[in-house]
Length: 299
Image 1 (tube, rainbow, N blue to C red):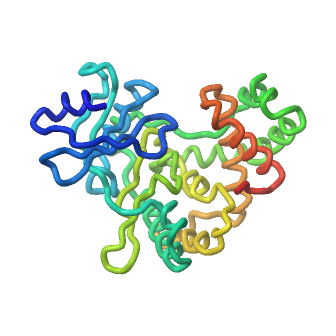
Image 2: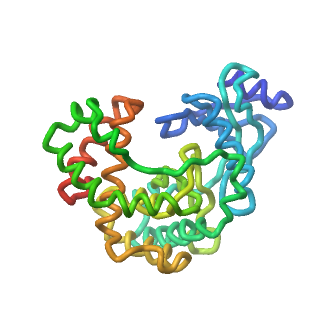
């Protein structure tokens, strides 16, 4: 990591490096330099240049529209040192996961409301602004996936039958959602949203990790944010929904709770069927599918 920073920023020297949490599909390293007061983040990619290039395009296109990190340097091709990377300014604040761990119910509610408003506002941006990013429409699972021997092996025959029934029930709705033209983050989870509280009220300071972004319905991101049933969910879930509705009225359907469970269940099944998921994540995805097929969110 040090050699990448030395090559990218030759006019300064590394003071310290610290691996940040996450790292499922990339590696994030906090970089402190001797001359620069503000820390930086070095993001290296495990899945090739095209993923890095997509995120570089998005970070540039979203500047001034959405709270995203400011890009300092990038090499999406990996030509410089053999590894695709980007470097951006570290966004100070707390992730929603950290606020849930240490904040009061009121703080959780305020932060969730701010996140809901931020997500609701994404759908107002003209998708043509992101044409260079080569965003594809997200769709959770196809009929070919449902016939995958790997999925049968991982889920078993009983759950695969239930999955087929769930797919048949929602495929028309999800197909219509795939035709919508909104920016979809793709991994809108509690670790990827950083908040700050400058005036006594939480506001979104940054949305991180755009490598899975696509186009379609913003309901994908709303469902992802509400994927898990947590002990503190009653403190903040309704406030997230209120904030989302305030910025995007009429977007949530009447059967929203059933739809979000179906979306997360089918999305987890698609991950299993892809065969590209790291082994350490397979048990969790199986639990998500098993619970979702029985109308339950896992914790």
